[in-house]
Image (cartoon, rainbow, N blue to C red; front, side, top):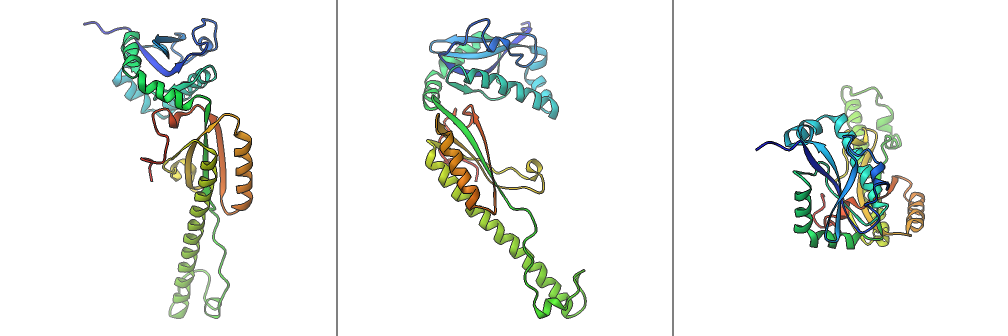
Length: 277
């Protein structure tokens, strides 16, 4: 059987909204830059936002190669996000994972029909709500130097030495290590207080695995990475709560991002259950 020249790439699933106009906002998007317009495929109450893509560049093997390249992965992710954001501005939208590809529009309709109940449940859950991200970073500067004692004051600062000066050096090393551990413990406590306050405003929350230094940089230690689902209109309360926390939790850095389409809550992830520790 001859392979089709094109496949159907799916960005999102929506409910209602003015999505089908040829001159509408979606049609103006470049999408993945294939030259084909971003369009829709309807099945019952659901509408998928899709784009034709060449099979030679988006079949399973080609996608694996494409997404293994960092620059191409970023380009595709940005394009995927741009289409989802545009659809979300028009109607309740369930974002689909990056690289969701079907053989044709018929397979898209089958998927919408097969998963209609779960999509409608997700759309009902996220309608009128937005996702916010909150990240907390521990302080990364050196811990305050302990007050010098008679034993440490006499020891050379440059490193270990014989006899008593070597023991004093090791004492200083242990003291600095304990100081770093204490600051990290305090930062974890502050992160829990931030999470408690924001969860009090949210209808759902997800704790995500904190990013490592390969993402944050070696001078930023992330102790909280969480997503929160809030009703529209609560942004002012959220910002006020975080402003108060920034004043109280002076030993940590708090970052807010959003509002976003509810990526973290579209597939049922509405509580901390199952989140990475």
